[in-house]
Image 1 (cartoon, rainbow, N blue to C red):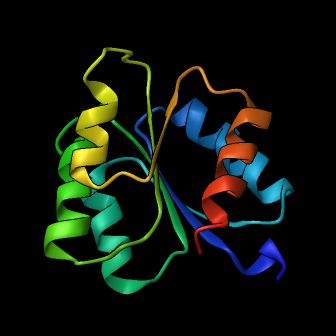
Image 2 (cartoon, rainbow, N blue to C red; image 1 turned 90 degrees about the vertical axis):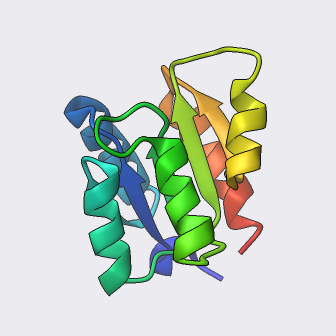
Length: 125
């Protein structure tokens, strides 16, 4: 199975970071969709399917946990979801797992670390 067909939705309000991830994932053969906030991501997911989601925890309007709640409880999707955050506190991992996140990665994320985590989640597909 090639990863060329794998479609990843990235949700992050940091425009620089989202562009960096977009380039890195495309160079690794993934198709990438971008959303700058959770509500925009919901609209995308109402129209298209994705194989994986990368979502930032801290965003205005609808944060990562709120988005995960929508994804798991309302949309009833079990799409593997990589949650990223710059907020390293003891309860973060528990909160992410409880909300339905598949994995957690801490910012600043280096490209090789991101690609390795994506490939790890891809194994769940």
